[in-house]
Image (cartoon, rainbow, N blue to C red; front, side):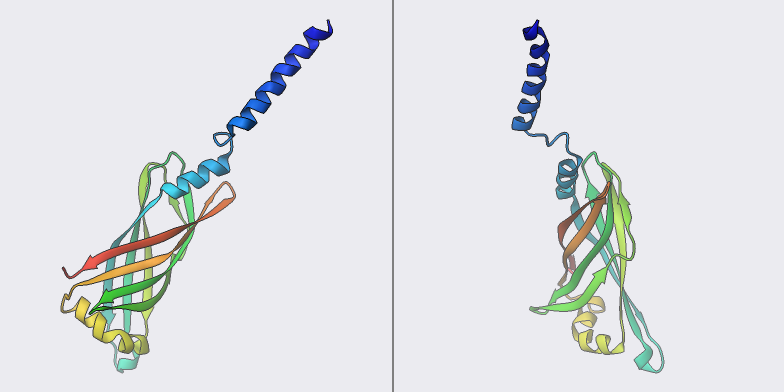
Length: 174
């Protein structure tokens, strides 16, 4: 009789040991979430400059509307809590840092779907004046250049936070 009672317990212990040795990645949502986050594909869809001239000129502004595409091929819907990066312009044989751009609010990234993250960067007169030679060449004269965004996205799924790198480019004027 003692062997009959011990037998089911041995089977249960053997199953638990087998699962722990085989790995429980498929049972751990954090592992699945981190894998889904690594599968995200980012693209720099648009950079649209808008010059807002004012008089006196010191009150003029330059606004860049930036659209980042995010493709989520996984089965998990994710949430981007934030995205921040340095926006640069590679033009006229040099790389010009324009500034830091950030996502103003979180956005859902549906499973097997594509989302667009919209951000805006504003420059005051002093910034416009410093960047004017390269910006005017690219924006108005359509000289070849490459927009670059290097940063990171902060994602969240069921309270598990993950940060993934974002490195995207877009050619302009070519």
